[in-house]
Length: 82
Image 1 (cartoon, rainbow, N blue to C red):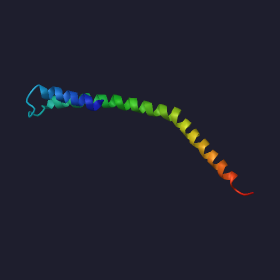
Image 2 (image 1 turned 90 degrees about the vertical axis):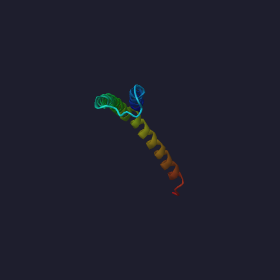
Image 3 (image 1 turned 45 degrees about the vertical axis):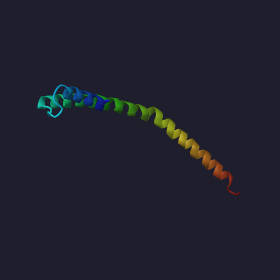
Image 4 (image 1 turned 120 degrees about the vertical axis):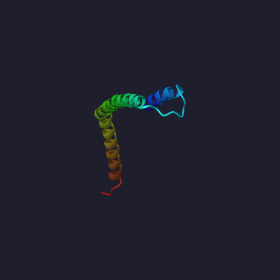
């Protein structure tokens, strides 16, 4: 999404003038500011999603793997001669 915003911003500025004309410092500064703000927002959202997944999904996955391994151990123990 951030890339789309940056590309849209750049294409708008490029379409306003000659494509070979470099962006001025003010335009580059605005693009950087907008990009940095959007990156910060996205980072907070991703961090929140990651923390949520660690407390909800990860324990379920660990329990599932543990149950599968315990089942495999039980199956192997059945083949051990007594």
